[in-house]
Image (cartoon, rainbow, N blue to C red; front, top):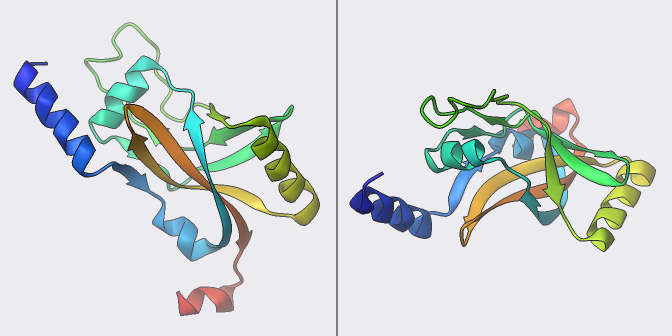
Length: 146
């Protein structure tokens, strides 16, 4: 990548830090609380995200062994960036949160019946962050209003 193209990419991310939005989540769920989480990504995924190839529409988060993972979020690999790696575009990615945040989310999901839904991906500095919302499913008649 040339120096001019790299500077243009950095300026674009500084102007608009949003990578992907999950508009369907706002339609399908009542969003109660939002939490910012980091994502454990591989190198080819970061390159693909910089190229704008992320999709959160079918994504959700789940709890396993005291950790929270993101499932179903699609990051389509770039052909030139993943020649030596077998890239799985819908692989399970770990969400990076503090222990007290994880514990409170686990309690609400297991006891109160909430669901964890990713609502957006965005840049914060040079890191990719995911906004995850505690959500309750809407009934059919609730969806008419939105």
